[in-house]
Length: 504
Image (cartoon, rainbow, N blue to C red; front, side, top):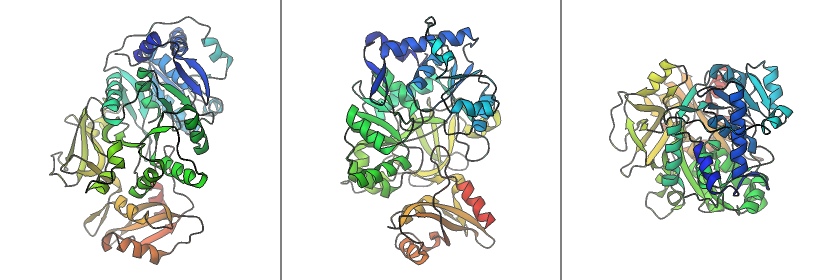
């Protein structure tokens, strides 16, 4: 089934329902949203776009992102979402690798693509060419099979070139219905706010809200701005939004500094990186029971585990801290196991690789059979994440396997050390990596971002670590940085930190 049919159905039963907003202003109801998407589909077909062809979207968050997306799907084509924060040359590489014939872009990004001499036809949403699309005829949605390609999502590429994850209509349908079963009971009275990139986790949740006839709000800034989020939440109410852990931390900090209470925020789904225990406790203490955690990957989008609102909020359970530090339990449509090096399931409580089997798992990497064969083995997705499952099914992620530090033959998980350091009052952010050591294999090294006015006090940090973790896990060195290097999705680039160590 073509996932875009959810828009067609909603437009049929509630054409006058408000659909697309730019800030406080409604720019399209569901009937208009549907018709504009059909006009985009008709124009794409007139340009020679056939079912299965790739069409890229390189835009900041805006209502036209959704109009273009559903138009591409109505035409039977494949959406290639590109993060608006990427450099023009990075976007051009994705366009070339995916074979995208047409690129919808927004002002400022068009020039970046032109400078990169991008292949394919560029259509700027501020151009007369784009405006003329909506004077054309309405097309009919093209039927698609459940296993047809729908999204071609490129991984964040923290090492080497990003890989194209092939996401099907079935995957998006399964993911969306799992949200309603395992994440949150959304309704048509809700409003989804796109403050994180629509090309990524925030945008991939739009389908279930279209299915329900909810409102879709794009901030006028086109991105993440804490005061703007609080203002729009108060105005619209019943806000659901996706946020990376770094965004939650920033929102909590700004809210505490300015007296914001989070009025109008109903649900914040957080994912996309490690949420440290101290940060989520701080956020819940300030905003209340509005948080839900999910764990997924591009290869299994948003759909591996979920930590419910009750689990995030509960402080009465004997093991509440352990559960809050976990990523929750397997979602309804998913099998999760912890495997050893041979892929055999290990006992509960024992660490191993998190493995996933589900209809939400990718069909493979775009034109990369070798990488696909390494990542999907006997039907199981090898996530590359190390963790363990407790007796109640809660999965605790310890680290990426490539980030694990081996010192003196003992495994040390950087996240455990980071969790300890983050409870020090002078530490704002931290990232722990391994440094080559001829005798021990690797040393533990911590890069810290200090709070305002704080100075690096190695002795104090040492004492703090020794109060919480084993001596052998304590960092052998600390380095203060003004900020941690991050990619365009907010993930810390540990490869950059390791390179910095080698250059010291």
